[in-house]
Length: 474
Ligand code: ADP
Ligand code: MG
Ligand code: ZN
Image 1 (spheres, rainbow, N blue to C red):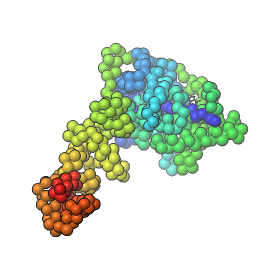
Image 2: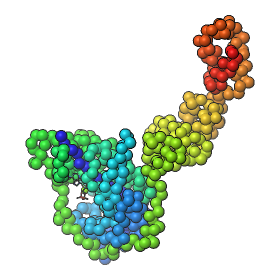
Image 3: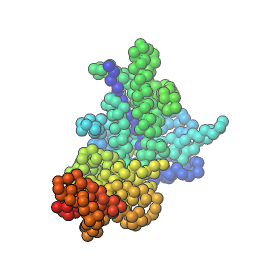
Image 4: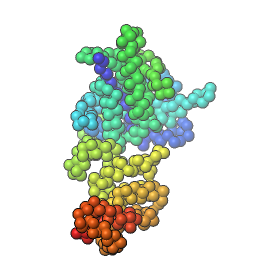
């Protein structure tokens, strides 16, 4: 009876070399408060200057989601006091953001699609960090002034699944563009989820609750489900008006509940006004020309993989979900593996062996190694089953595929001479069975194949054995 309404705000940390308004480095693995200067410390008299790289990356994003890239955008002050924000305001873009009116296409497993509207993407400065140790708290301003692109969707999603699809797609796009590390654990892709419910068929929007800082797709899914439950129960109990208020809530993954964190400030409380210390941000035609030429995005790559490589739509979707996997596949094909074989091992057997936080990049199996393994199956040097043992061995030992095959003695005998000899010997030793077979006992065919496989200790190529046995028995 209820419809779920979800709108998402995603803060993407842009991977620029220097901060948004000063030339401090953006790397965090430094001593606390080391990457700071009068500007990002908000010392009196220090003035911000826009880092152009931020504008370049914003153009790329705008282009990727088919949005309008405003040739002129402006900065505004959003006032709030928080210890990790020394300016006591955040510089952001309220009235005219750099990017507006984009779209993002969701693809469902059943082959249907849905377009989610992106309201805007605006540039803003990140805050520092409060560090709480026992009964003291410290402020680290290394992150203060780091550039963020906040991407705000329209409330177009109707389920937790749609929200997750949207986030995964967005994540994949910014990674493809190379404008952010988008590492959720490290906070370079932070999601605020806005959730409300409404009676089915109702057009108007009901009160939303904002759930902040959830750092994994799985937890986001869970938080939405739990919050929807809370809201619909309040409705059914007749206490919706009292209990569901515009507020910011936190998701507690241990208690599996959302909890009120603070009332949501109304825009008036932020006392927004145009930032007087900055010039307007101008995207010149030359700049636009240069940065709107973006690399191939996940959807286009998926379609190309279907068309050029003959992958199924489903397989192509999986393998293009990250740029690393898509590149890995193309490298394997360049090494001579077939697309289907390469895809099967890359998306199946390899990830099944990546545990303890190992990733495609940190695994000892590179594209050349996996491609060679697939080629050895395809040229019938080893069986599919043996290849799994070889892959296990390669995880533990720094050797080539051929060395591993030798070492494990898994080479398939496809040499017809050797197999013919085995079949001959078996026929001599089982002359009676040969007679029976020839007399019409067809079932004995399997016996000869089995004996040959056994004689070869499983290393004979079964297909070759079949052919030879058939020819010899006549
Ligand atoms: P704020 O910064 O105050 O959170 P924004 O306008 O930046 O406000 O973001 C509002 C977000 O909430 C947008 O993603 C929007 O789609 C979403 N939203 C607005 N109304 C609703 C609603 N009734 N239910 C769910 N999401 C909503
Ligand atoms: Mg919000
Ligand atoms: Zn600085």
